[in-house]
Image (tube, rainbow, N blue to C red; front, side, top):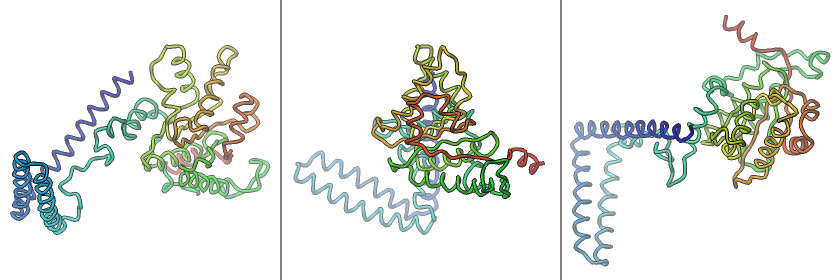
Length: 338
């Protein structure tokens, strides 16, 4: 399944890479047609390279070095003149270069022999994230609407002396701090607790959006689906390779922890898988900083009652618990859209 997906995605990469190169050549041809001086420089660059190559084939090592130095000198002067003309013709610095989506791998999907993060993310998005991550173009920090949250404290209802809006402002600032300090190995992971419809998913997507902008890999999976995949993989019923991807993703988001089916027959397996995931990522066994966000409708007490002491100790020591509370904002959004 994953190999087929990889082949499919690499075909898409080939297409967009070829398209970028083709469009660059088209821009180049148009400029050469409209500017005779630029065409002359291009011709000179080509001819001196060919001539130098012929001379190097005939020369000894000492003369070859002199030829290369002369080629470098001539080329540098011509490129400087060329860039001056391009600046006058266009504000785009790399007008004649292909406009690749990924500047690191140049839309090849690989840097040397290692898979580029952009390709990993593309595969994750198709295989895992598509049904989980919302519309990241809308769900980001710039679109965060604090007015959706009540500014009236209600201790009897929310068990807090501050309003849902004030609490959400604190949570938003904590999330932004998490993003800005993502590469700090001392920065704690996050657990979002609270009922549905009060902003956990939106804030999670805000964080995911910013981490993706940093060129990192985000894997987003619901706990029930993740555990089912992992157990199938463990017993050879699946070759999804999800377990390794879960361990290695820069940011792992486990959503809806606590909604998975807990039975006497398989709960030990799920707990063991969860502990391994949490512990491995905390120990940085992949020799890089990895972070995890867990989202759950359970409160802190319920988490520690359901999951093992080993899991609880890791969560207590290495995660910040962020409590969400308030009225269901989905109704407010629906009312506003109507």
